[in-house]
Length: 89
Image 1 (cartoon, rainbow, N blue to C red):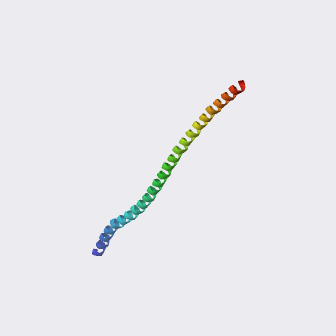
Image 2 (image 1 turned 60 degrees about the vertical axis):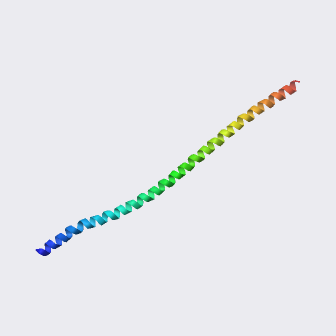
């Protein structure tokens, strides 16, 4: 009987210890996954910021091209007017 009590006591002590180490192992795995996902998110965030910066640069360049196009149209109109005036003389 005392052997049975000793075995039951050992089993009752072993179960919480086993659960503790099992949870610690799972927690370590989850932490590694979390850190990997965190690195991935940081990388994606850096890519997003780079794309936004590139988008801003492209938008500014497009505006400059549009302004240059407008100036060219104005110059063309002025040249056409001068040409018409020169031909009218």
